[in-house]
Image 1 (spheres, rainbow, N blue to C red):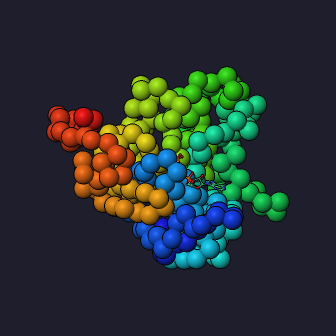
Image 2: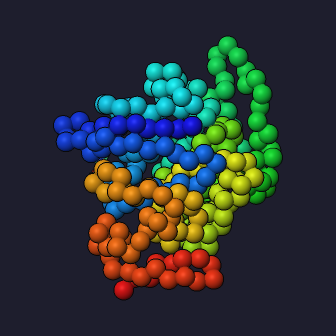
Amino acid sequence: MLDAQHLRFAYPQQAPLIDDLSLTIPEHQITTLLGPNGSGKSTLLKLLTRQLSPQAGHVHLAGQDLWRAYSAQSAAQQIAVVHQHHELYDELTVADLIQLGRLPYQSSLFADPAPADTAAIMAELQLTALADRPVKQLSGGQAQRVWLALALNQEPTYLFLDEPTTYLDLHYQTEFLRLLRQLNQQRGLTIVMILHDLNQALRYSDYCCLLDHGQLVATGTPQSVLTPARVKTTFQLECDLITTKYGPVLIQA
Ligand SMILES: Nc1ncnc2c1ncn2[C@@H]1O[C@H](COP(=O)(O)OP(=O)(O)OP(=O)(O)O)[C@@H](O)[C@H]1O
């Protein structure tokens, strides 16, 4: 269980961005963090994944404090993050990059005790034929699958993704979100992602958390959170929610 209680966080020399925020991530579900630019989504994701330490409150992973009871390495055995920008490792081949996902299980004293089935992960994400290609030669959609494969190679319980569809065209966005749903269903993976597209959140998440000015203004099922009234107050957008054969869709006035 991943549980945040009474979090407070301020960047240096700034007023608190997040103050007294509590949130429990539902297990084996897909949760989406939503909110306007600058509302604190990435900051919250970093607090939940041990990239930022709260100044008050705590995050508990399996009942233990994420900072006091876990090292970066032991936390990374349970929590994997797919970041938005990854230029740093472009020179590596697909296979070598995915292998970095095993780092949390290695130390100078011990080899990886139980290597993950990296080949199966690569096959599942249709990356086998690309194994020897440098990552920088891949399309955006292929590269995003490689970063996902690295994260899965960590064998995490929780998979976090910061705006995973940003650089993808509509086809790849849909393909990627369907892949996440498949991983959630087949592996029972708990997924938390930041999205900007409210209709994608309606369609691909089980639970939504809406942030505004660092505060959680609503949590719950996508339809209970993304009401036209709340979209208006949070995003200053007039819209209707209509029902289609594919599910509910928000249409802007
Ligand atoms: N490293 C930092 N130092 C100082 N301020 C920061 C830092 N990172 C973010 N901020 C500020 O904190 C606020 C929230 O930023 P954050 O990136 O968490 O929001 P967000 O909801 O993810 O935004 P976006 O949708 O634009 O990605 C913003 O005002 C931002 O300028």
